[in-house]
Amino acid sequence: MKRLVLVGGGHAHVHVLAALAARPFAATQVTLVSPYSRQIYSGMLPGWISGYYAIEDCALSLDSLTRRAGVNFVQTSCSGLDLKAGQVCCANGKAIPFDYASIDAGPAANLAGLDGAMEHALPVRPIEGFVAAWPGLLEKARNHTGEFTLVIVGDGAAALELAFAMQTRFTAEGLSHARLTLVGGNPQALAGFPYLLRRKAAKLLAEQGIAHLGKRRVIGLQPDHLLLEDGSRIAADATLLATGAAAPGWPAASGLATDDAGFIRVDPLLQSVSHPFVFAAGDVAAYADPRPKSGVFAVRAGPPLAENLRAVCQGQALKPWQPQRRALYLLSTGRKHALAAWGGFSTSGAWVWRWKDGIDKRFIAQFGS
Image (cartoon, rainbow, N blue to C red; front, top):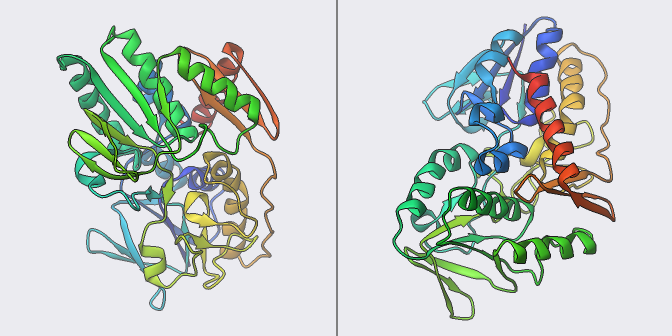
């Protein structure tokens, strides 16, 4: 009997659980270790903030998925791997033995160079932490006397989607005293996206009254302001951090080969380059052919990961996976409007939001109870 432990309930592992439910791995005992009983689909988070979805509409039940798959579910965090003994070390003090392990744990918030971030700001990651804190932040805005300033540190896709969603919610609730500001190091938001899409995003930010302060590097946070590298300050009644993904510390500390940022290096078979009995996918993985940290690639890695885990447990040949060169990005801009980008092509409109809404709901329905 082989022992397979899935570490984390990310988008790729959701596919693995579905594959197990459809056809169990022969002579294999499978265990999932995750700190949460559900997996919130990040693509629908802006819609929840805007008020278009209930949080239940955006979440997959890991309890239900593991039950259907015949998988043991241990609700705790992974604190490391004992690679010599073949054990997953858990935050609850237990050690789970394995012959093979697969890692699809969420990344940490990137707080590098941000003094006071943990004390005075709300990171978007982990998503469960943000989901728990958002209602309180919204209530703070409702009850605030005078102008309420919410600053979002970051100017990538996640930061913009958050800003548009929050502005939509503020407008819907009549919170005209709430002000949103994006602070980022790039001259223009959405660096790396097509020029026309970046220009459209800048126009939408201006139309909705969301300020973008570019070429600014935040180095410190206090309860009522942000400190910039040039010595200036930005007043803030609340601060959110959408600064991208950072690797958790335990993979490198466990002895797995990682890239310079600490993400697990895997080959085209999705096996660790240093320990082939460990697999990784999603944001925690550094693919042989590098790709951005995006839910798009985490979802796409799911089926090949499931196939190779089945193959390795059953003594069969594994198949390499080549991530697609281009990915479709659909970015919500609030008010049931969205931007789309594919390579150098971009477009926008209410129809793009309907397209995105349909894709997101089908994803949830595919794996829902």
